[in-house]
Image 1 (cartoon, rainbow, N blue to C red):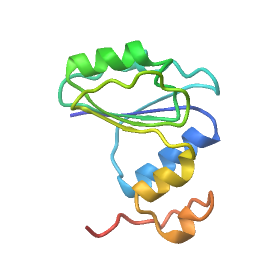
Image 2 (image 1 turned 90 degrees about the vertical axis):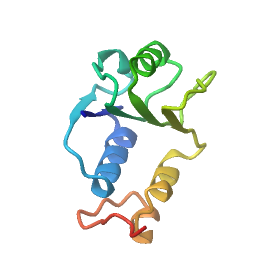
Image 3 (image 1 turned 180 degrees about the vertical axis):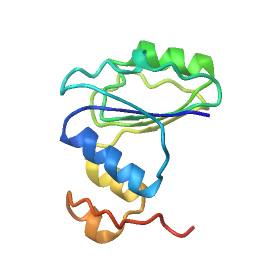
Amino acid sequence: MTYYDIFNGDADGICALQQLRLVEPVGGVCITSVKRDIALLERVEAAAGDDVTALDISLDTNRAGLDKLLARGARVRYFDHHFAGEIPNHLSLVITYPRKYSPTIKRRLRLPRAIRSGDVIRPHATAPQL
C-alpha cells in the first residue's frame, strides 16, 4: 500500500498536511504545486489498496482525476473548502467540506485545544487515545 498526500502549495494546504501527519504519521508520496495550480489528482498513480489524501484542492477542478482514482480502487479522503460541484457517492470516498476549513480539520484530528485554537503547529502533538 502506498500513501499519497496531495495538497495545495499555499498556507492552508501546507498547514493541513503538517497537522494531519503529526497525528497520523505515515511515509508516502507528496504531490503539490504552487498556489492556484490545483489540478493535482491527475498526477497520482494510485491503484487498488492505496490511500490518497487530498487537502485544500477543489474537487470540481480535480473531478476527472478523482473519478480515475476511485475507478482504480484507491481510497480517497478529501478535506477542502473550495467549490465542489456535485460530490460523488462512492464507498471509498470520505469528504469533509466545511465552510471554515482549518478549524474543522483540527477538530476532526482531535488535536489538543492549544493547537486547535489558532494556527499554531507544535511538533509534540500526539494522536488521540481512542
